[in-house]
Image (cartoon, rainbow, N blue to C red; front, side, top):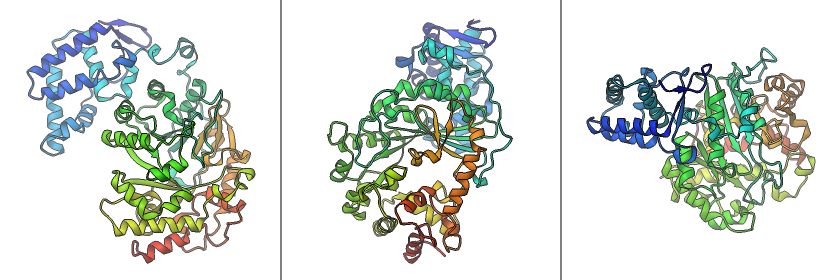
Length: 531
């Protein structure tokens, strides 16, 4: 029997030598097994993090075993590329997964307990890499001081039975935009998110508290963590693994946790793209079109061009299957480039999913009063979107999916709308958390004290959701979206409330529409939607 580190936690401890013996034993199975290539792939996958975290292991004996959970095994193995690339459909893939399981169970039945458990660790590290981060000793990820203060055993205590939301669509869902660091290696001309100096990276105490608040609440079934900045990759690869391990320690069984990263991609290497793919990150890259346009707006802290690094990062992410899309800030240089050239750029670089964000000023009266270069009017933005749509209709191969066009089209055609800007009811579901723990309603409002809702170190998110300030913000947003007599209101729900927020201060606010009527009308006239 392997040594137990704690009789309370029933944590088995394995040396690097024991783990090497387990992999050697599996190689023997692979040598005489019809699907030996698959087994060798799993053995190799299980060692990916050894260079960063070490070759020894621990195993929590209280957690369900992969080899003894047939349903989980079949669900995981039958969907692996190494299996799905073989001939046959889902039934054949499940049959193969069952054959692999039967062989492993028969082989391991003749081994002693320590060898059986070590093989379980090998398979976990290969097949469930995020959960398997907990098979390394915690001191590989956290300092002794951090381990003393993690206090992960505390239970979540609800403050309110129910925090009402305007939109029941979001029931059971929470989105946290986490400013893990405000440090950034770029100095984009329109950006308000970067900071310099000390105390710009989120300390562990804030991260643990934020994760606990999101993941211990029994009413939250799905959580999206948006890794934001600054530039989140400045945390380093091991920094990412630390945070993933914390999520696995805290989250409840069956809870869906999704991690989305917004990066400038200038730091992305093959190591980063592999990490993103291995741990299931959805990665979005900020790029402002071809070289001449991008390098006008997105230069590094030393004033140097960044396009080549970003383009290389995108290629690496595409090849790893980790790129979910790109975001373009529609500023004057992008408008000058033109819709046609932007569409051609996406097509030439293999980019198929795009978000187009209008350049916007800093939140607060002072920021919004800045020069017009930090703001794009609704009318010019909508005309650019219609131009993009016209160009992709004229040159549909390969097709470019544009979030700000496809969601309005889906709404017009009674389809599924996935973009929060058209769904309404966002207050109390989307929160931005600063490095010091300050909680804001969405990161677009950071800087306006009216939208600061509390601090995660001292305030429960459930209490914030039920607070008087959130109730007032819901009413404020509702009042900003009273254009219900607009024929398109049922499709846009008043658009993103931040658009009304900016328009009000810039004297662009309308009483009859949020500003998207011309987009819907234009899409209808182009024959892309049914009324």
